[in-house]
Image (cartoon, rainbow, N blue to C red; front, side, top):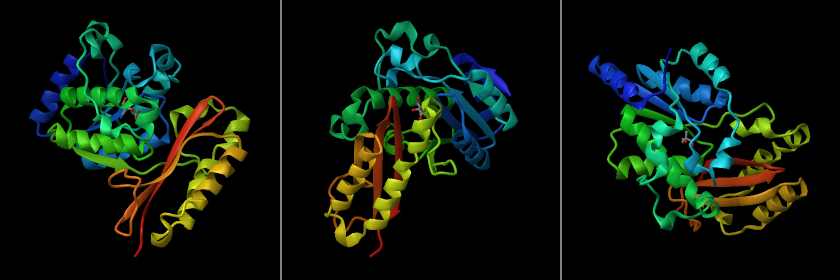
Length: 285
Ligand code: PAF
């Protein structure tokens, strides 16, 4: 497994891979890898000749530099896991190599302001940071395939748009959420939960599953069960940022009889940890 820190070295390495007619799957991560990431790697390996995993805690998608410094890091452990899982290349660039000149004159890739909804309403800087870093990775690596987890539903939604609108010739694969036995979606942030919080955390998935059982084509406008679900999470000690049902194709609030699939989205704080989860479902006629 090659560990590469310099974008130019990776750029040249990738050229050689492509010259041999090998395809590349990119798995962008911020490290602190768990089984959810391993699933992304497996999907990459099934769909391409070589897999490149990037590990970079991107400060531009956090509120500030301090916030990004608090993100859990475990580079040595990550390398072991990646080697064990036969990853071909790990790209873990230093901050200065990804954002030249200390962010001065940095050009950004952003989502339109009409999409300042849900996660981007609370954190307007976040997707600007994600779109910029993912574009940089796409430009350095030119992968044929890139894999992203479905847990970050809105991120995946925007990345699919980014690829179409910015003319990247890359196939985006959305990979299903991996869960612990009790239903908690795997996340690098879960290790920040104390034992009491960890016990309560699966309530998010239980609640969105409960909503999914209540909802059908005929009661899309009735949000009584959404109110009940909200109260249940608050009762368990969550502070809720988002609990909503949207059209999964458009993220639109407006649901009609024509809506064919919905997404139940939840972002909630338990203590100092913000957890996100979602459940997508097709609506039967
Ligand atoms: O999902 C993540 O871990 C990050 O947002 C990503 C895609 C690696 C960009 O920094």
